[in-house]
Length: 304
Image 1 (tube, rainbow, N blue to C red):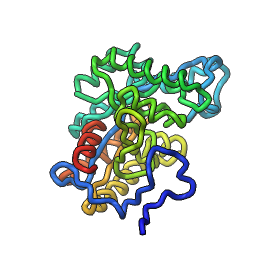
Image 2: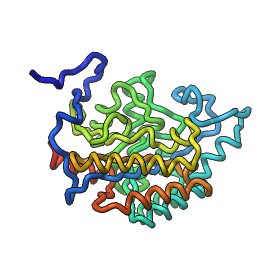
Image 3: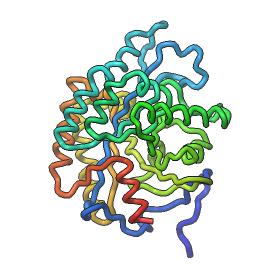
Image 4: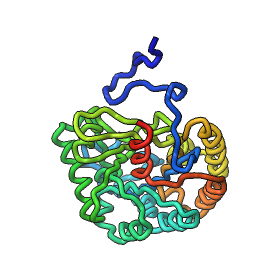
């Protein structure tokens, strides 16, 4: 009897149900029990939202919004591109971690210095939509969404001279069409589906698509802003999560994907807790520090 049955509620066509206990053992390069992937978000927040149909119903993380122009809230997000990201870069350099940078098309077109600094570090670029204030929604027509995706990818390619093969939507936003439209544009993996601790293949009509899951509970925005956890708990929760993933990974390799927002974790009083967690994690033996494409390439070649 096949126990891997598609259950009620699995109402999408992109993958079948798969329990961790029923899969064959996953091994990372060198027998590493854990792959560490760090995603850094570089995104632009628009001041005037009045003409944006696909804006969030409430801006994520905006507390007590002021009348337009809401300089306090929007300017705080710009802090990440002006200051915070360089603090994050220094920490990742310290532990020889090459990040996967989710860069939206507005940043790619208007912040060449940021693109250059990422290229200098050999970071991987993945698509991240147009701005943090323009989401993908099912209210879009297929042609509107296709144009949104294509324009985002093309802008990033122009800025970096390399076409991205990964994608992370702003605020994890997707329509029911998004994976297949991404695959048709040559995108090979997407980071919007936080439902696993291993990559997995997604079914698309054309091209190739994998999910590279993020640990949503460890996303700094969700931890520190939405859930308002004390910053002193941040490194402890990252280290506790790592301990369990590292232990479980000796049975079958695990993936620890951390999603960082420089306007948030790059603040002077917060950054030391990221430093502390990464010092602990990278201090363990045989951790595979990898970009999204390296992880997906290995998975596709060795586990399917």
